Image (tube, rainbow, N blue to C red; front, side, top):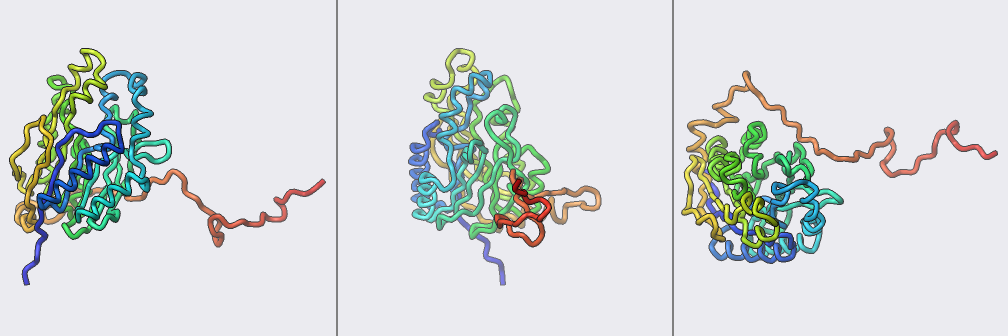
Length: 340
């Protein structure tokens, strides 16, 4: 009996966020989910920190200047379990859509670059954080941990995700390939910054990173990518120097096949919309027949990866053997206070 491989339509968002406005961002996200569903998609990927938009202000001036945006950015980041999060889950359920949402996750007083994988029934498949924010992102965001390098069984196949320059981390990529990832959502913020001055931040390098991920991993890569709107430029670029550093546009959403080919007609970089591709997971075996990096093409006798997936909990409660955490324990007689 032959294997029945999943076949479905995937969607990658290319649009400007509702910058620094979480409720408007939720409205726009739900509209895009509905649009993708109307066009037959079963999976939709959103750009990095789509909610509430990527904090470009950290690249434009000093940290002290960027702090002028921080409280608004923090307050408009998404907290799990909030009414806004509930609306997103309800939209996934209503439209029978698997959603991979890019967000700035607000947890207590800290923020994290995150992806929320929501199933078509509205339940959480996974919540992950970018392991290491890139360069000046570290002035805004905290770190993830090894548990964030995970691939998940879904009706659409084995699904995983990474953010932006995690696609330039060889060991992190290999950790994902080794978990038999079939569909990968690689989230990008936009390619609008330092044009002509930092080639590594441009579209050529970063779309190539998504393409190489598809070829190396023998998997489909859904790579949503935001755009920068003129309104965002107007808000953050307060002088000519900043206006030269951040330009409107920068959208390069792509969906790549396991052999590296682009599976759709790209949108112009300043145009908002959704790109679609029909995925047949049966293609993966053909790609891996040539090279399976974690299988027949590997040499574990020469090189191996050590992956620590222990969650990086900040506080780990513990108690003496035989004592339940939280249980009141009578101290030994020698340590009791003696009234005088």
